Structure formats: structure tokens, C-alpha cells
Length: 302
Ligand SMILES: [Fe+2]
Image 1 (cartoon, rainbow, N blue to C red):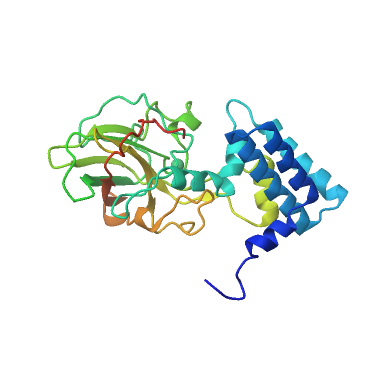
Image 2 (cartoon, rainbow, N blue to C red):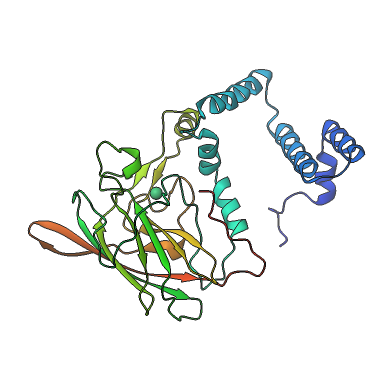
């Protein structure tokens, strides 16, 4: 690509590196090579380039340090403000994409998010995930397929979602029954699965901490469009962790953590109302790709 918007050449970039960053690199080289040293060198170069571009005052530098300090103070065993920061800056999503590339025919992988539970009991196909029957009924039918279109029988399909108010069962254990809106199924010989649930609502990431304040100051939202999480595993395939999003959600184009991809947007179709209740249906295919040779099976961080 050539044009007036091309970035600086490698020589120009090299010329822009600060004397301090150069000296840092020289000291690292003298100390020996390692993955950590490579990361430190790249980080120092990037930070120095940022400072050269922005030329912050001493006061602005102090405000930046204060922000990072606040993020650290907000993080504890239940609230990971650093992960939230990585999420809203698109960093978590980029790392997920880089580490889990999928062939075009396969369903894209996404972050699992913080609400997954591995301990959900097995359920029969057709079960109702709603244990409190609050919300508009949604019938979900899907198939698990290989990239060549053949069905994957006996695949484990795990499902979890927020309720009609945008809250997960483990966010409000005193108000929702345990395992509400969570499922765990095996596909039939044709790779099919189906279950009943309620239509989920989207939700917003926490706004009370420094990351929420930053996003508000930037005029950016913290919304996540409505979605259902799926994790599908089967021998010989890479485990797929993904979300299926409601394409009619007003926030579909501004997911705060960059999880929406065109292949993951589905129609939650309205059906004729029954007994005064709105009802919906969702059909989807989840396409697995073969396990890469030599790959170690991971349960996924989040
Ligand atoms: Fe979610």
C-alpha cells in the first residue's frame, strides 16, 4: 500500500526512538535475551514513542500514574479492574483472536467472560434452562457441525446467559435459583441440540470504577448487546467458546469488549404471542475446526 496515509518508514521510526529507549535496549542486550526482555524492550519503545507523540506535562504524567494506581486499588479477587481495562481497550479480544485463529468456515472464538461455571449438571435435550420462568420464552435449536458440514454427534454443549434484566445467576445468588439459565447438553447423532430458555437482555460493564470513569470521560459506552454464551467440546476438535448475539439489540455495533463478529449475529425471531406472552425462536449452527496437531487442550482463561 502506498499513499499519503502510509505510516513512517522503518528508518523514520528508528530515528524517532528516544535516547533513553535506545539505552534501555542496549542494557537489555548486555544482560542477555529472554521473552521477558523482548517484552520489556517492545513496551519501552512503545511507551517512549507515545510520550514523544503526546508530550505530556508533568501534571498530566501524574494524572496518568494516578489512574493506573486507582485501577490497581480497584482490583481484588472478585473484581479484576485490570482485565476490565484490557477488555474495553480491545486488548483481550485481540489476544483471543491471535491465539485462537479459526478457518473461515468455522465459528469464531470469543472470550468466555467472567460468568462461566463448569459445574452445571447434565441436562436432557429439550430441557428448560429457566428455573424461575421470568422473561419471554425463547426456543433454541442448533447443530454442531465440522467445517465440512458433517454433524458432530455427542459433542458437549455448555450454555450460559443473562436473564431478562441482563443479570447472570451468579451475580445475584439471592434472587435467582442456582444454575438458572445455564445448560449442559450432548448433541444427538445428527449433531442437533435444542432447549428452552428466556430471551436475554444486554447489560453494561461496571461503571463505578476508574475504567468506567475513563470510558464515561471519553464519551464511550459500556454496553454489551444481548447474547447467549456457548462452549462446545468434542474429541478431535478445538474447543469453541463463543457468544451468539441478538442482531436487533441497539448496542449491536458498539459492544464494549469487541466480541461481536458478523458470523455471531443471529435473529432472535418473534413468534406469535401465546397466553399474552411474547415468544421467540433462535436457530444456529456452531461449526468446529479440527484440533491442531500438538496443541495442548486448554480450558480457556475466561
Ligand atoms: Fe455475557
